[in-house]
Amino acid sequence: VASNNGLGSCTSSYEYESAGLELVENSPSEILHATYELLNRHQEDSPQYAESQELVAKFWSLYYQLKPAPIKSFVEGQEPNIGSHFLKNNLHWTG
Image (cartoon, rainbow, N blue to C red; front, side):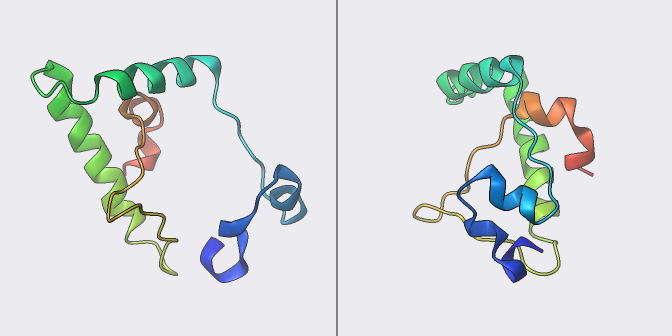
């Protein structure tokens, strides 16, 4: 939807609200966990690593199935990071 109506280029919460969308801020706990994951994301020997990678892969798989096609926001072919802790607490984002 965002790619068809220009919402992918919004720069303020007012623009989303004007379109009838509710912006949901991350909680302090979500920000803390995202920071922890960012600092430790390359520790592939972590027991949680495989589970985290599986959740993230499920998210991106669903994302690419969106119709119309989702907005591409890549830097040199790299998908943006999404926290596995966030996905564990929002399993509806992973199917």
